[in-house]
Image (tube, rainbow, N blue to C red; front, side, top):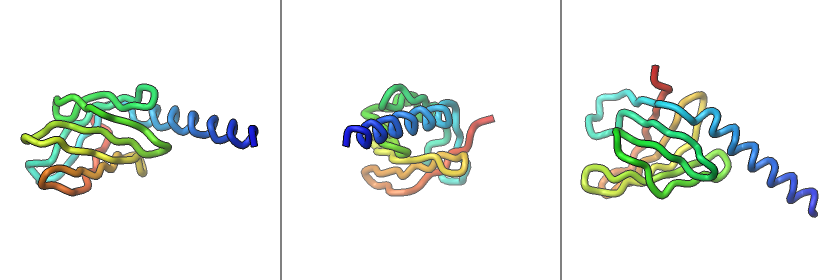
Amino acid sequence: MKKILISLLVSAILSVVALGAVMDGKWSAQGSDKTAPKTLSIRLVGNSVQGTMDGTALTRSGVAGEYFWFYVAREGGNFLYKGQIKNGKIELREVGPHSNRTLTFSRAQ
């Protein structure tokens, strides 16, 4: 039992480290939706995500396996973003006062 727990712990630590290596940096979104965020600058620090979205600080963040989340105060509301990295892109689900959509960010040039 002890070996299994150690194995799971090491696996969790390695997945967070790998996520950080892929996640860290500047990202941008394309699209015609003028209300959607356009820039994301993020960095994995321990079990939290730090950075900005369109210049506004990320708050109350966390990481669990390959998934991460954070909140951003925008347009007079507090929006929750839950996401993961798929095929070299960040896919975020935005949940806010009047919003529930999926956003895709690519690494900025």
